[in-house]
Structures are given as C-alpha cells and as structure tokens.
Length: 285
Image (cartoon, rainbow, N blue to C red; front, side):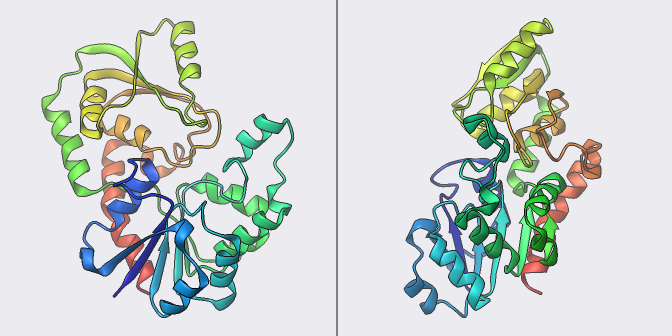
C-alpha cells in the first residue's frame, strides 16, 4: 500500500507536537511505502497521477483551497489529522478574538467553508480532543455527519520507553517548576511566570533543548506550569509531565485534561498503546 503523507512540515524539519504525532503513526510503515509531500506542493496534476492511492494529511495550512475542494468533490481516499483549527485565519478562535477584539467568524468565510467541506468529505478525521471536536461541530453542523475519531496525541515506542526509564533513574531533586519558553502565540510563558510569582513557586524557564534532554530536565523537576493563551488541543508536554509524575498547573485551554484516559498514569499508558492500532484499523477499513 502506497501512502501519500502530506504536511506543512515533517519531524525532520521541526519537532513540534503535530509532527511527532504524525511520525509516530508512521513508525512501523516501511519507508518505501510512504511518499512524503509538502502541502504547498500539492497540485491537481499530482493528485491525478495518484488518485487511486491513499492520502493522509497532517497539518495542511499551506494546502491550496482549490486542492482541498478537488479532494472533497472527487471523494478520493483521504484521511485528515486535525491538530488545531485551520478554518480560522489564526488557527484558533480565541487567538482570533484576542487579535481583532471580535468573535471569530471564519466559519462563514470562503476558506472556512472549504476547510469544513474538506473535513466532512474525508474518509476519516482524527481529532486531538473531544473539546476540539465539539468546537468544530459548533461552527459546522455537517461535521457531525462525517467519520470522526478522537485520537489524541501519539507517542512512538522509543519515546514512551525513554520516559519510563527516566521515571526509574532520575531523582526529582529540583523543587522548581518548569515553564516552557516558546515563540508560539498559544504557549504563553509570561502567564506561567506571573502565576509562579503570584503563588510563590520557584521556577525555571526552559527552551531550545533537544527533545530527550528536555524530558530529562522535566523529569528532575517538581512540576510544570503551562497556561496557554488559547485552545491547545492535546499538548504532548502535559502528557509527558503526567507520565513523569510532575505536579501540573494548567488552565482550561488544555483541552484533553477532562478525558477519562488522562485520569492516571496507568490509563495514559494504556491509551497510548492503543493509538496506532486504532488509527490504522480505521484507515484500512
């Protein structure tokens, strides 16, 4: 089976949560079976040449609207991993509201309608959290008619094993709270610093570390303060902190926090073990 994997960026380009989840889902697929395609390079001619193949979309913000319409109208074999809110020009209704002091109405724009049609006509849409799916349904009634699955973030086996090894061998000898330093408009480090100072919590801003070094640092610290400014659909950082026995201070924008699988470390691990099989079971139906 040849798979056309489309994304704005891949894990080799950028180690973001979406890219790592997409890569984890491809972990056991032979490299020769995956054709990685950057979203901005997809054309109707390319689709015509591969119209009988399977397509999987990760982040697709650079996909042309006409290309999305082509997939929807021709009912091709395509599946979408929806990581955020790409119907919105800010990829977040809350960020949109903050930027223009006006309720997001991108669902009524031509682009918003095309994105909703692209999702509605996909063979499967995989969401990161139940809250995310419900927000989409609130904007687009016809999303409910599609095949929707709340998948959550996905970890490769190597990363899960490394986290469990850290639990065994790294002592929590640092009583400070980690605050992620990030340029993302969603992940607001300033709010975390203000929270720490208001609550007399010692903290350390941490950023620009290689992934495994970052996990080791997090494992050694008492906790994590993570207060995003807008919807964060299923942040891997929160899952990592939970698995590393950190005290987590977060706000309501962390959208997966009320789901049953996040209630304990045991349930998180059980859930993570099932994600890849759940995904491919639906893709191959």
